[in-house]
Length: 399
Image 1 (cartoon, helix red, strand yellow):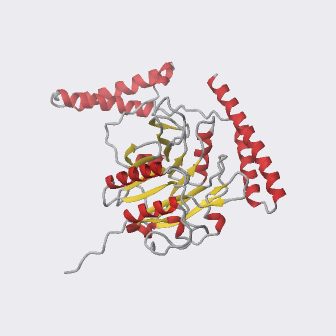
Image 2 (cartoon, rainbow, N blue to C red):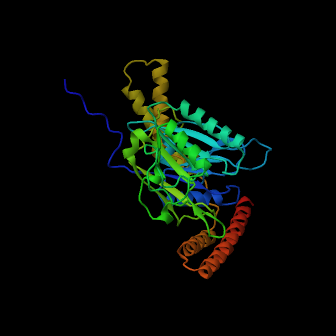
Image 3 (cartoon, rainbow, N blue to C red):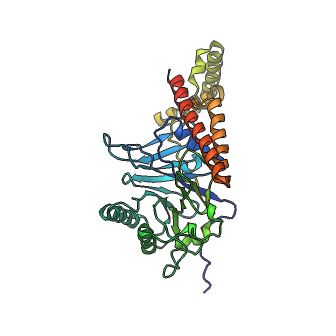
């Protein structure tokens, strides 16, 4: 008996980008728009966000059409920590379910062409946190991992505050030798143990990039850089992981770099039934000429319907025919309603944001202390101007 070859999950025609970014805060005016703009610029389908500082949990849509899932602390508490997932339009249509676990963990499950994908976004305690706080986090993460269906492709990512280094002795199945040069700290050991227990590989240690493209965090003085943001991938689907790299050019005034993962998998849209509500541009009926055209088109459709009827239909059939006449007439004469969300950030503010990106690149490319100091001063000045301009634009928009 000839056995069939195992079904391949991946598609050579699609490469999906998934990102992780610690943004420090999403409370500032215009910060969400800046993050989604960078997400669009890099073509990211799913962006995990750490330290959002949004309390409670929920789901919202941005002005540009992205869907934001977030999980934070309870209302009334300090605005700290918080995690979230920002989904592109295609990824949002693939969303099957999601769960706000805590202010440090959020989980979402997506439908794909061959295999379901579960994404878990985390924000781990720092290495200086108490042992009790660390143990609570990793115990909670393990509980979430055990709830994921066994055959799902699992992607666990976030600011893990973990240094794993390059030494993979005894952990060859969990990590490679291409991590950033550093000694593994206590959080790194805990993170590696979780990956080993759940058959995950640490993606940032598998690809031979330059050191600057491995390190995800830079100290405020620019003197220290570490690789503490990570993405772990199901070992079973290791071959679908194409690349993991830090993008130093992305800028939303954070001390962490954007981390991008390339996965060769096509996320399919969940087919929706015909029961979805369709909105039409009924406001056009205020115009007398459009109203007369609509009446005439509807009258002609009903006349054709009466001429075609040879026997008296049932009540259900007659209602379906009437509904179809109205729907087709509205579609032809009025058209479907479009979203009326408006962009509130001004053109001048976006130009200042572009200037801030150029200043960030100047900081990254600085070779001397004087150059770095001057470039950092320029970047801070532009960042203050962006914040002022965003607040001003929002006041104008609200008024």
